[in-house]
Image (cartoon, rainbow, N blue to C red):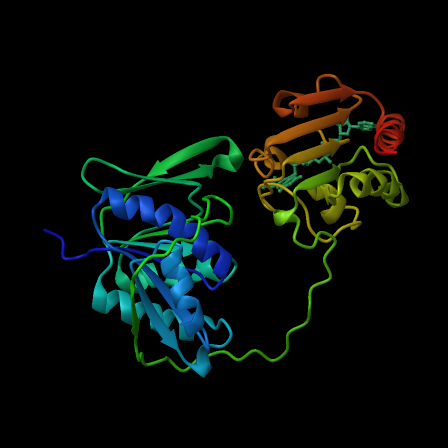
Length: 321
Ligand SMILES: Cc1cc2nc3c(=O)[nH]c(=O)nc-3n(C[C@H](O)[C@H](O)[C@H](O)COP(=O)(O)OP(=O)(O)OC[C@H]3O[C@@H](n4cnc5c(N)ncnc54)[C@H](O)[C@@H]3O)c2cc1C
């Protein structure tokens, strides 16, 4: 029998840690094992009880001023030390820019496998973790499992829901771990100029594609977004080719999950749709009735966005008056 036990979660992103605890709780209950949150940072101990309220049975706390900011070698050495000593069965790591390479490097050190970007998780009859991930440019879903332990999977934001906090008891263990001396040094950090701040959290997104002729025409979308309390989004060519934005929505960009996604002049090829398929409602405005966006849209308007958008904005304005 394997000596590995317990479901662990770790992310340097606190919200994502809570989301993974939500799913981790279900998996731990299914496997009749404990759920452990790994809390790493500087002056983070006050979060430990909150992690227990959100489903953790145990918190392994590594609190050290050297861990104030994410630094890959330092965090890797902490996670390597803990996993090598306590041997979890499953380790879920937040699929952030930092978390993904961390998971891959940890898996290499532990000589085990890693499934990146799992949008679903389940457990098979042998108790092995099954991760589902989008593959082939968004055209297929791969189901992957493990032949080794610990089973490491990375989890994107908003794949799973947080649990409502409850009054629960748990154990907080403070651990003193040797931290590897980093081989790199951050020389400078600059805030990124973004066109779509926090778009992944947006409840409403009004998004434009190559159907938009000029950069100034963004104002049409901004007017609608303002009424709907939403943010602007865009397809990749508007960022990469036209340089009107710095980021985009889709397979290689932001995966969004709004209540409402309004796609204006976006054809809806698979690479774009891969980033919007979790939207609650998709409304498409496109002058080509054959545009693939209509296959995924809940509501479709066949027409010129230069006519439809001002009319829609005006109608909504009237409704609100
Ligand atoms: C590896 C890879 C990853 C990629 N990742 C992404 C990604 O993450 N996100 C992404 O968006 N793309 C991505 N792409 C690019 C993707 O393949 C498409 O090229 C892109 O999504 C098309 O953008 P679009 O819909 O704005 O443009 P188009 O495909 O040119 O569509 C424009 C649409 O506007 C409509 N239109 C034109 N004028 C009007 C008008 N006046 N009124 C109404 N409708 C009008 C047209 O009918 C057409 O349907 C990726 C490609 C590759 C190869």
